[in-house]
Length: 606
Image (cartoon, rainbow, N blue to C red; front, side, top):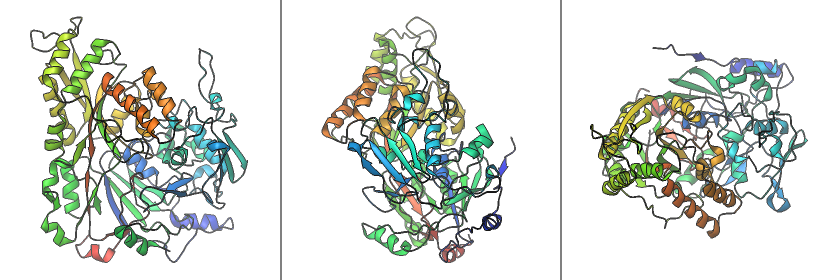
């Protein structure tokens, strides 16, 4: 077994305070600061990748990053529907020029956590840091999956993009563009080519969070191992792919909770948090637990303070007809049902010589695979009823979702086989089909090296056997599958997407041609779809845009780069000592808000 690598902070909290004091500054300390015996214990279901907001797109890494790095805006914790509020800004952006100009005023006195890259000097957050961080998404060497949020939108950003028609243009992050300007040390102006109704949401994404150029310059392509931000937590000991520890940032500015609840549950949380500083815990222990049974048993053994999304195949361990088992109720465990903005699907590589392409016979192959998927059986057997069928890429409750739209692709093995017969996929002597030219047809699906992955492998094996298609499975870690997918070396695999902002654009960008190799892992690149996407992103949420989204969904079903599976309904379990937990539709974590009743926890010996 490969030895684990350990990472520890370069400067302990005590030394941070001394360092700042030596420069005439002191780390903020308040009476409401978290007690140092409060530890939040959580799990993630796959290993983390890079702790770099420009690169990370997997849930574990983004979850960690959103507690270390800070965008200019963030979401109100309790507001539903979601509402934005200033984070590092004094106030919400000033918007003018018919929605094309944004002016942001940063709060002075926000500092990056100390790092060797700063040579012992305090490093204040400035407008130039956000300009640098946004420009960095354009760097071809970074290969950021988040470039879609800004590309083509910022005035003059063609200077940052590779030139077309074979004219070389080296990327230079110092290139000035009218779309990103620092008016002064704390004032940033962004100019757009056209109004964008989602742009404020974009300014609340972790990918738009501030990184310091000195840190990137010092660590280069290893910067994902050295996260340095301005957020409420800093990286502590790191046992890669096993356990990550976050420590409360002793330098974090005084942030006092002031959100208002809108129902009985959230009003109770607001009453307990109002006037208190954030974060409420001093340490977060994050364990990587890939096996489903280990997650449930770990929670039942009080190793974790909550368990989000109880694994559907094991829901009988804790639920009885959709309700929490009486034995757990007696222990004070709470059940919370939640519908995340999430879509599960299986994508196929449109550049793959076997399964990709836009020729009729290639479309027929992918459609047949889509027709072999039995949604009703999947929801009943695999998801134990904790899901609904995905009709389009958009989950319920995102802007642009059309409840009346129904997928034209339903389980139909007879039709699937007829399609393959019609387009020349004949059965050979071994009863497996060949390509129309008579060459062997072999499919390969990447899957997770876990019990979950193996269960899903068997479902797809069964589906393909029903079509007489030969398939094999290549198992690997989630991070390695992502890495191979970005390089175009994955033929097909399951995936899911959770909204970064609550709009349909965030899902359809996964199929936008220019995003191929970034967020668009299927490398779907259909001119008609691309044109619709470009038109839709310039429209506000409206019947006109919803109609375009319907057409886009029809094209996805017609060309079948994806097999749409489900939208989950998650059953979350909370320990009795966990306080202030309230699942947010967009933010991945609520770690800065939750608190621990240590006395209640000690009663169970944990």
